[in-house]
Length: 220
Ligand code: CA
Image (cartoon, rainbow, N blue to C red; front, side):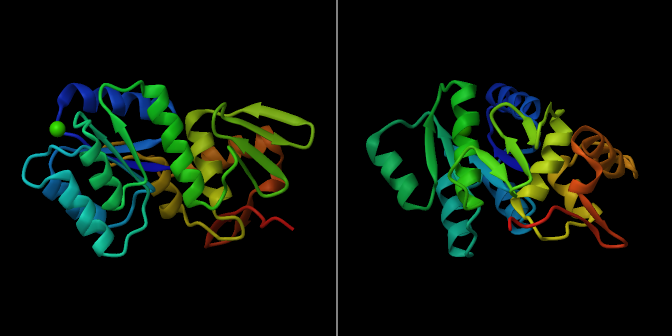
């Protein structure tokens, strides 16, 4: 799961980045509105954390342009502007949620999980295809009687697959969801993760479609 963080404050940006990485997200961090707009055109992220007071282009303009372009990516505004009018404006511009600084990072993570779940059409905190169940709050994966806590990367891999059951995800698509821009990705990193998740939960749960990629089955 790959998040775009748009924040010009170095300290807040660094703290949020670390918290997101610890919570198994891949994070790309940009520091101004124009760069954010350009990056969002490539549509490689699954959610955006957006500051409002930004150099070069205000966060509300970034959001307006994004929605005008038809994007439905979940957006959480994170800002020190705490006036009611500002919040209403942010939500009216198409934000999914709004968090006023200073905020507790655990609250940010909970809200992020919630908007991502709703985007995936699942309101419950558990992601499941009927065989594997993944708990995004604890990173626990259950399959029958097997319950395993996954590593951050294993979790990111399984989450990507479970958000699109029945859809084949290629190596590049999986890498894009698991790793940020500045992370070195070994050529066999995805194979390695698939192997370790299969080892924990059972080999049959993730199907390999030769030459195309991997998938988990749709719920019956
Ligand atoms: Ca700012």
